[in-house]
Image (cartoon, rainbow, N blue to C red; front, side, top):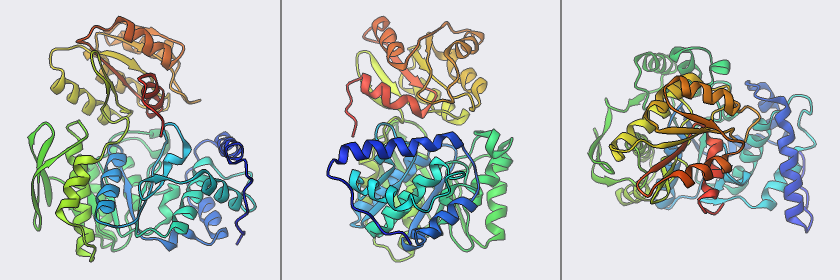
Length: 434
């Protein structure tokens, strides 16, 4: 197994070189499969076997659900690790140890450790970064790690762990070039994280997705707990709800995150906590309450400023866009939003546009910061076909500025369509990077 190396004194310069090196792997694109990552992890001592984990997959809500779980565990006194993707501003956002980003030194150290053993012709960006994450998490020795799936589940690089609990949030059509066409095919990939005898917490509501999850879980003797059936959230107001299951009842939970779907994500996190309690972990009700009431996840119906209100939401799946539309109608029933829209071309673009464009007064179309972005002119045509005036701009920043100049104090500007929109819009509103 390779030895860790000392890093130079000029950490910032070496960190910049490290990030450039990692991004050089983008040339391989997305290659699903476990052979490469399994070999890479074996070469560095299989760190994924040295920490206990919760694995979270799904089309919508897996980031928020992971954040809720991490917060509840931390407030219960446990040391935690959280691995998520993508990041908004700093690569290190992907790997958090007890709520804090790993240091630049730690990232440099792990990258150097893996360099002698990675396959230069096949290793992808996500495989290398997952190896970094698992190496640093193992070194930190947390009580529990929350690991979010990158893409799909069955063939995702994170599916090399054997977790204490598997969580599958709601499932919708997404990444069909990689995961197959239709809900059944996508659910099969998501349900690929289910392990023999490992309990499954799920919020999958569509009957085709539910049938797949239940069948795979049954074949692996994994008990399934379903939102709306074996546990539920009961909405009381826009930001409060009650949680109910066979063994737990918590009244008057308050959400920090706006959006109708966050009650469901929070309920999945609470049911995960219940399962951990059944395994002997001590998780007080007070920790659950505080975890739900304080967790905020950047870019999930996040209000960035007021008068005019500016909301950023990373909705990039049909279901995510429908949830965004529903939340806007509830919170802004009398306003037609001004829309800043950017979408990647490998998404279900036409459905996303048909969902959100008709409620907007007008749209500015931009290209998210990705080589997979749909060009603004093509996006504008789809928006106009939905009956909404649309105009292309050459950057997220210029598009946002144009909308802000036109907006009145009572308007609402909504930026959506891609997670890659979040960082630039937050910075344009004066929000500091972590």
